[in-house]
Image (cartoon, rainbow, N blue to C red; front, side, top):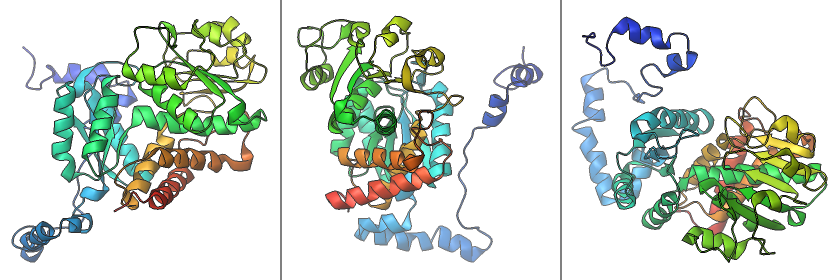
Length: 399
């Protein structure tokens, strides 16, 4: 029999992970809750809890908006997942997803000075997730949906946006899309082109692929084709989900019905959001001075060294290579700006403003290996928050 610990023999459990520094960082979890004021006397206790707290609760009951001033809720984000699409690991379940959600909460604190609470759910039922999140929403100032698989993620986000009067964003969709647009704006500058001149091929019609396509269409991209595992989406296919039907109606102007590799011939931009691999011949067939964003992580769909033989700008999702497309450039500032402004939602215009703000941090320093800022650049969250907050106020979607 093992020892008293859940993992069996204590020494064996310790030895299994002793040589991996990642486990040391996660020992005991990465988060804690701390009080903002000490309780050192009976007077402190009486003000922090009963009877003093009753006066505050009564005031909020009479004027609910006072909760924005006298509770932590408005500056706390719920990081909600069901564990069905975690990183590149796939459907690993809620418990295994918890370290990722804790990490996300750490990034909210580090880059936006917002508290965040991981909420992992032991259900994949759309109705149950929507009802649960709606029920706990009064405790939070924003809802960051995370690592929920497509196509369920689209319905969950849409229904929660309709139900709640606080910012709701599925980061796997929109965080990725915001940073991709920022990077593409600057990559276009490097090659001396306008967004409206570019033809893009998107590999992947999941959450990130759909959101990236939508934001590029909103930004005025020249043309865009989206491919899933069966080829480019077009009107002649009979296997289209409602979201893929939207993509067909708004992309692929030429009605191309072939493969993703075929669509790359003469294309200006490859945007990989699907995994797998792309042959060198396909990248070689792209237009001169093309742009390759190969974002599968840890193994990009297009080998970056190979891509550099043909492309003027190459970006990946990896931190050890130039031009990392990292969602941390977007979501902390987006939620901080929306919450500071008292926004009741996150609009498409706010996302576009965030992308412009990220691109502008690079500014005149833009070059082939620097089209997006470093994920550690502290200017980014401030710039994004300011742009998102200003846009929310201009649109009148604030309290």
